[in-house]
Amino acid sequence: MRQVVLDTETTGLSWEKGNRLVEIGCIELLERRPTGRSFQCYLNPDREFEQGAQEVTGLTVEFLADKPRFAEIVDEFLAFIEGAELVIHNAAFDVGFLNAELTRLAAGHGRIQDRCGIEDSLLLARQRFPGQRNSLDALCKRLGVDNSHRQLHGALLDAQLLTEAYLALTSGQEEIGFASEPVAVAQRTLPATSPDAAARPRVRVDDEETTAHDARLQGLQAKAGHCLWLQLESAA
Image 1: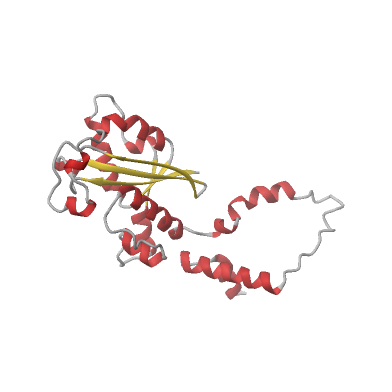
Image 2: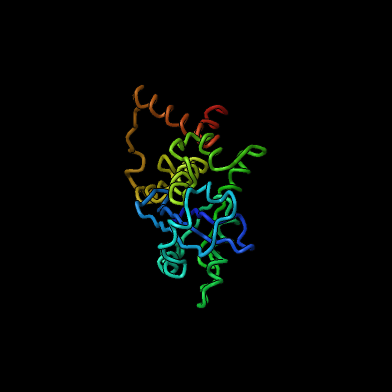
């Protein structure tokens, strides 16, 4: 699966009031692993910041004056996200701004959700931690993601932090190789009538390997809040 973790920064909180994008940041994941590919650009919004918005990002109209407008980078941006599942924290906010920018263009570019699937990590966090604060900062603290270098909001920085938080939030059995196990087993499985079927060697695990295995399961439990193997062991 190809995913793109996405974040934006804007001149204000509401695209309906004419606020614009000032930064887009994206991180590409393939089978839940960062590929090293990213997309980032600052944008000239052709308007002032709303009160308070500038302090959040540290960006200024003067800094953005020579940056490209959305129309100049739209093709590159859409090519980067095309067909991916977008992972966005509070997706309605970012998707609303992106669709508003697309609507302003002369050519018919459609909507973001027509090109990509969308996974809202805020909704996932609320399901996992009901009744608790689930901002990106709160998630980072809860899931052990170091965000001490985050003094200001930045789209690429926040996308990087969200990548770590999302992987921790959704970590499961695939982290220890279960995702590829069905294929590998299917390739190795012998027919029931094979004379080798009853002659499979026994695998003995030493104490060091057992300790490392238990530590790994405890790590998954701490990150994901549950671990199927530990549940099975306790029920046995």
